[in-house]
Image 1 (cartoon, rainbow, N blue to C red):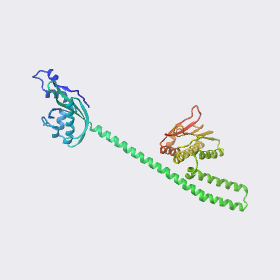
Image 2: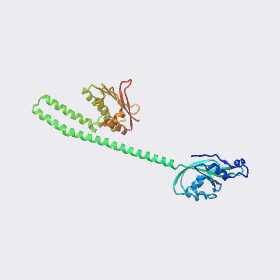
Image 3: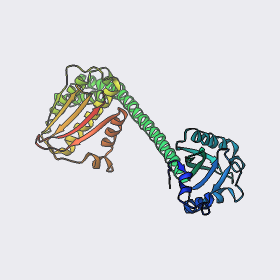
Image 4: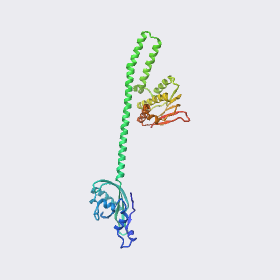
Length: 359
């Protein structure tokens, strides 16, 4: 409960009563005893002249003519008395919040309102103080702030762990790529030379060539070094050509801007992995006939993968068991501080997965 009083003129209050009936203490009790806040007044020497029931419960019954430092921590009292002097000097109401040690040596928060007590003859003759206990409110706010900070720290730790997992995944891809190229690739090449000497039929050699080419492509697709040494447009162009050669019934297309400045190796790696996963999902699930890959950098970097297949909910699908690919897309986008939007096909007849990075 918060109360704010205008400056109180006790001269006018005394004029509304007869001299025999006017008693400031009695008037004080009638007005303020029903208030749960601590209410008391002081004279210009900062002696306490009266207090309501809540104040008496706070400091005890023996307070008339005494000063506040006798009841609460002197350091806290100095702060309160300094604001008392300010109120009496300006004759203006003052509000502030203070954390003080109460008579039971417990720390409590109060919202404090101070109003000057005015007399037409003598001017400001004292100050009326109202202290509302807001300890529970402040503790709740502090608990909320602490929880928010803990959640923020936990989220930062999770983002770090996710980033490390993606980094470990790329390192594992690099290792597998190296093994495919250095071990299996050389093994199949030597096998081909040996079979040529034995004059094996052309069909067998063709199958062997196809196997060697598949290993080479697999090695390239999962190799971070291969990705770092080529532009994104070249990487996606090679991927699209290979997908179209599969004759899956889906036509893949891509459109890139002429100027691709501002795409560092990390973003290029994330974008290519996302495009790979999207194309894989289109082939496995869409039941469509067309897929378009678009990149625009006119207003921040933006990737769109469009398909004319069956629509789905990206949010719901990414939460299902086995949707590791979609989860990986989400984490890659978070790692780039980007946003994901999925729009089901409307007038354009294309579903669109949009990934946009800030400028």
